[in-house]
Image (tube, rainbow, N blue to C red; front, side, top):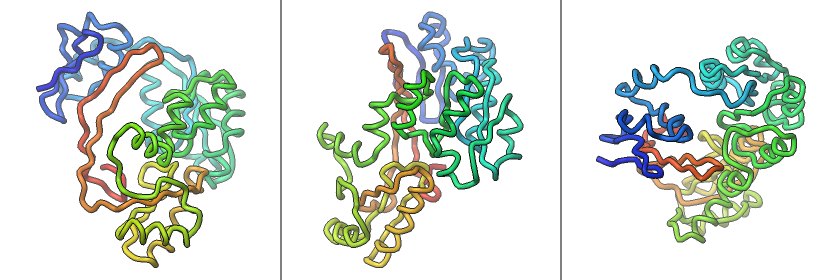
Length: 296
């Protein structure tokens, strides 16, 4: 049994990866910055206690969700519970989507191709300006790990609900993050810690690393821009497909190559920190069960 402690405040007790119990005796004495995230631990044992707390204090009056689909719907539902107005953005193809109907306002940001809509920073900035949104929730994928987007929002005086620009630049880029990990003495998967120039360069790297290899989008996430290659031909084909997919999904076609680990254990430890120095870490997440390189 592990106790989660932040600044001498007991936040919760973990008995297993699937159950988190908020310590009610200590809960009331925690600072608001700790109570707010603690309130949203997911467990049937904490649901009732969380529900009787009432809606958390609103930080923003209006938030724009720079995404679509399921994640946009979830953000809108949570914002409504918090009394925050929402702005949805949509491409021509998503005009009748559920997130558009649910939001208080909706703005068309361009044609169906994502590089002309959901990855179009100027169009999203214009939507923010026209609606008066005070903050942006990026969801996942698209611009959620784009440091240039965060910088543009900072310059426009709009809050980004996520990591800061420097953290995003360092850890949102897989090539950069692997270099930082190595410099910090953290073990990394063998591979090439740089940008793969073309398919011929990819072949050279793959043969050096040893098959099988994984071609991976440096700016990627959500299982996109990734291909496994067991031989030379699959490297050539995978390089073309992965780079195109990465460009269309993230606006960045840079790839890295590393050794493919078959049937690994994927364990995550998530840490939440704010700009005031408050830090909270959560129980480990077992993410080994995946579909299309994305955790289920």
